[in-house]
Image 1 (tube, rainbow, N blue to C red):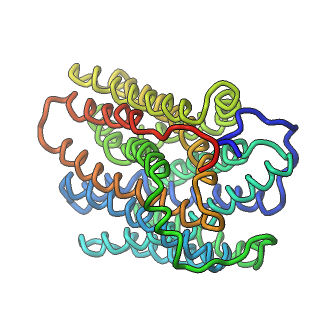
Image 2: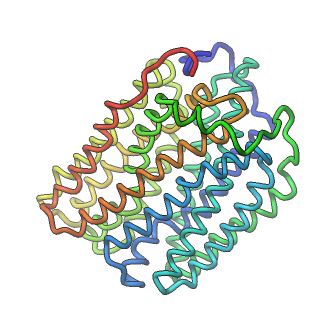
Length: 409
């Protein structure tokens, strides 16, 4: 099998019931998640009084406890199947959001955030690896390119990311606790629905041992090169929760624009992801698609770096952030589906869950380190362009380490 088919050889066939359920699952996950997360940094800094570097650490720990432990969730999904891992993760997410709503001390906030992240480390790799596996099977049966299925998965996630902040912004007029309890309610509904609808056994999927497969993974240089590129993009995207809210607060004097900037990002993905994926599949190899996405992301941060010394406020101050969101989102649209579609060709047979988890785990470690550094940069009183220029350099540098393309893994 080639690294990633450039074009479909046959017309797309309708999605299977399982793929439809998994894609709708991603929609529901993100509604609950993004109702809370965009407002977390401001809550930690204002209501709880955390320093900027500590907010960066907390956000990085949230990402690392999620992305960093994906390898555990992926291995468990390989061993036990999708259903028990997803149901357990949803139950933990309900508990984590409820805890966060009542957390006041630093230790309590960190505990709830770690639980929220670990919950996703269970359900997300289970769902993502099964979507990728089903997409490959569908492609091999002549049903259409796998990247299109993964693009639909991304669209569903971003539709949830569009609705979530709007719901959270509305509930924030009450208080942050109400936002958290609403997020818990969404995941409670997902838990109940999947207990009924998610199959107990998926045909063609056989359990594998939890142990094994790690040695070949650790020796897979092309896989780790993909991790570096994907991790750089994830670190950049994580700035929507750290650097962007801080700059929006400076420019507008409130967090109100944050919800609309998130909505802009999600709306772009919902309306343009399939078109971008189709265009990239016809004109770009996987490596070039990833490189183009990373360069667009770097350009978005560079735009803010160029405008920041002027100290604009109001609409003029928010305009560079809108440019950042547009370019970062376009970069994400090029990087995310292609990276996920490329991964099955790098994974060992029967270990797609492990590799899906490891991709996010390595990326999560990069985000933890990068978020701590970027949070410190924002607090150091450097020239206003400096933090944004540093953020622009990261995805550009990642282009240099992307894996080469060849048939097979």
